[in-house]
Image (cartoon, rainbow, N blue to C red; front, side, top):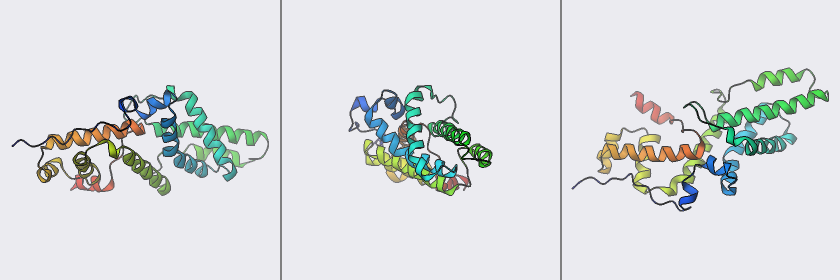
Length: 217
């Protein structure tokens, strides 16, 4: 008996129109659900950046709102021209510009004083600081939220194959033997879920530490 092809994706509950476009493409059309999801996914990270850059607690909500307003007006300019480009990195640049604008206004009022240049230097920090444990945790939460959002779009066996290959880091041949399918079907399942996550996040999820360690062994 031939092995089943587990990589078939179920019809999405939200309907074909809602799933034929990526989350960012839907946001560009002013889709309300897409904007609510973007806000829920990225607000925690935006707030963290504001705190890291020294934005006063009473200003964090205003800066976050300013960033999303800027995103709404300029999202059409976002393009992934290389694998290193990501919506998160682009959002970091928008947030940095808004905070710099706030600092300039404070400096013009004399509120920032000599601290202004220190804040500007801090704002030149890269968007992915490996020493920032809180940001790593927030990005992990972002990926978790994304996985929960797309989980219902796939059959259980497709999801298990993706999880075992991507999160647990097991080789496709081992997973295929355990599940009674072909290695190609495992790779296809992994590819389909990763592509859906990339559509949602605007970037491919990074490999988990378990997967990295297993690949080394």
